[in-house]
Length: 81
Image: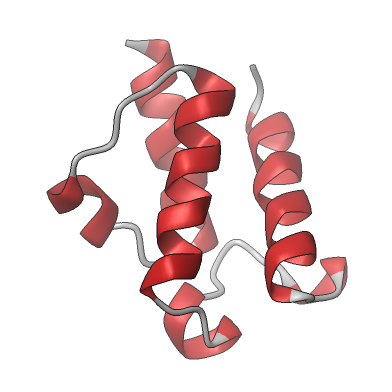
């Protein structure tokens, strides 16, 4: 799996769940501050990543995912180990 593949999945999820345009979803964008995502939105994203990539995300790890890049980096690190 490549960084672009993970980014595409995250982007697709955010477009669907938060009704964002794909152009808005940049690596440095923050889920809460830039997308007005609440805890349920973030929980659903984490569940999607767990299901898609067969990884496990603890509550502590999830709380450290602040930006789109954080989510992509986390998946790449977890799925590669």
